[in-house]
Image (cartoon, rainbow, N blue to C red; front, side, top):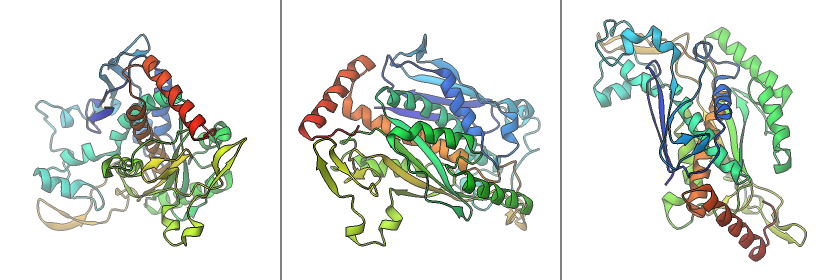
Length: 395
């Protein structure tokens, strides 16, 4: 069973990740993992913290001579800013522990409910863990999962399709054009496939900066090259779409997820919604649309698996909202923490990591095996089966 865990606080010594269940024999490109970490730090609208940190992976176990061992992979991403917070965030006696105490909760953040749940007078004990900085570990873990998927020719992508009120339908990604799309998206400061729309998004972020506001938006994330038959219809917790939705909803500030054209399809008649099935000898089984997001009945159907995630604006505002002081119980403005104006581009990279985790997990469930050499013939046999018996030629 493939699992991963994260630990660490935003201004602690570092962020820790553990991956359990990764098969042995996978070649690991550590520079590619560091490149994924750099992608998360980019994006127009990011805050000052990203100019301090230079996230890099430090692997402690589970990888030797660039190959996974089948044992738990442990790694850490060191927080450079911790040197400025040692007397505040240390595990021993902290002489300045009250210097950065938070007692004015920010509406929209975990500050107040977390303080109530864990009985924390200083809400820093909540916000340091609730911080989206935790997602750096997810991106690092996701990079491992991406490399596993790529070994079986499954690739993950994402794109920002809206920021604030600026939106567009999205780049029409086809398997043969994935690299072309990636070149466009990675060159955009907001990870948008349209240069013209991307410029409008940047202008919206600039306006929000001037007003002391923050902006949310939406990104699309998907997996190309997914064979039919991943996931299951038999129980609720094995359905692929429910697992993807849960993974994306776990990202900080994500408040909505739709698989395929789920929201729009709710208002259309069935004849305009369902992806009709065709067969031609040269193409095999195929579809002319993919409104289902590549999933039917909780099972991948051989089309690109894709979803959209909707992100609310960052809760920290430079012109803070009304709140209270939980020490004096007087009305005050909410606390201000160093934060982003817009983090949708960064969230899309985190979305890739979570999609990669779900897809890697269901692939392992389907193929099985403790090492790559064991998995390769099993996956080849499965592909042969779906091609010969079910006429599937697309993947």
